[in-house]
Image (cartoon, rainbow, N blue to C red):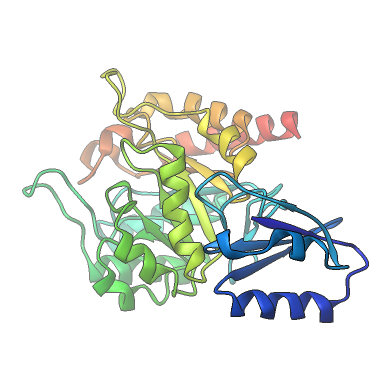
Length: 334
């Protein structure tokens, strides 16, 4: 349920209403836009007397929401959420970012070289895996804590904020210097982890699960937001279908759908969704044209000898070309 507040309502009366709702077991979520103030009611609203609520002099109207996700719903929060990092980088709204770097951190020389190159080409964030979920127990699992340390070295050398994946909540203390915590497809419905992340004061990049619907994805975001952390960024990384020509099937329509139903920013992982380096450019341009708030791209200085996902990684020279073309598309659609 959402309550539309009249423009002339005073802060004192809005606060009084919010406090009364709390006594009824309802969590009020106040969203102030340019032209409208909305109070979203989170919880069991069946006991709320809507006639009484609607009769208050500060209430313009009341609307019920049928979707199970509330806090992630655009009806609750009409204005786009913009996540601002410590260095001032903004994700969401009219802002656009590149998150670029290797699938996996392999050495200090490698990560700093790639970070320097992608920054020069316009990347605002460095992506890199320290902990790597792999289907095979024999595949390279990442460098773990040492990988985090090397990402911090690259951050210090280039000034790029870092986004990397958390696989187990027990490792959260290692992520103090990480700017955005990535939750991968396998953990999208790890609800106990999502509850914990609601208490973390860092932006969360939430990837869509292999076979999850958009509603299920938003319900996972709801866990984080309802826990108190509003800085959630969605990441479309392709879904599993019957098609075998690509690693996954890029659901390009999820971008406009998310913008329609949610206020959260959405970026597209064009590397995992295609699985082939020669498809990354096309996927990048299409995702940008569809309205993505950014792209996540795997860039490796030597893809042929990468320890992880070399077949879908592009070189720094290729990233130079793609980033330039992407910005031309951005200019055309703005």
